[in-house]
Length: 301
Image (cartoon, rainbow, N blue to C red; front, side, top):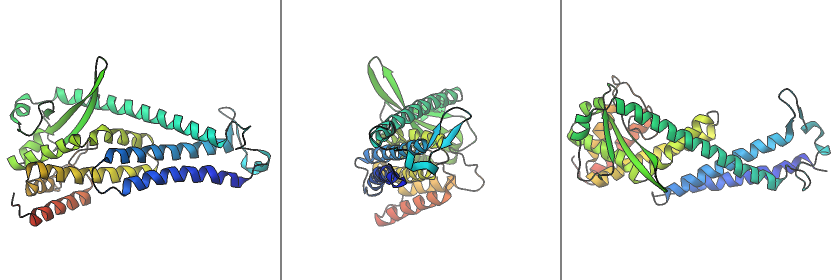
């Protein structure tokens, strides 16, 4: 006979899996293999959530659209996690993997479709003259920079996966609004472009939009919102300092960030890597970090 305490083992297993991923995300001190940590975090999260769902299903057997019954009141009559029962612990682990894979696959497809739709929409409003004028020696030729006409200040980047015969390659896009170009001086604009380039250079865009898509699908989960927030903050701070190492103008980037939080400007965030953020506290922390860096290294630009 099974007992309600038999639920403890699968729950502990699911929490242990999640804990491994959580620790992996929080202890990293550099960008080295950061994508592996975030992948471990997401996979462990998916396994934990799917295990809990399956455990709940093992208690609530749904027999039709209108009928279901609860087994918890007579739990001692149901050997939920025995070898003879189809909902045993190995089955829970196996179904968790399948469930997690399906969610990831659906989210990946939705994220790529939404980005392609966004790109098509932006290309219709593109400004070829401004796009051709923004050129930097340090920006690789295979990067696509697009300026579109809009009165909203915006700068962001994303990566689309393309297929050429049997080869899959990444297509990186840096997007700027005409309002953002009018707002910034030459140094500030260069640092903003360098910041967005840093996201793709460090592979943030390979999975950041995927995570945002998953969080949109499972919008009711506070744990996933926490994962998204931690990821976003670390991505933005790291991209700031990579841009500074590349160009060497921390004060210019700080000024650009300050201009995006002026109250008379309307804030809008299109993608997960947009430099314009509604989280003003995070932007202020980033500005202070850049100014501290400039003071420590005696940089005046």
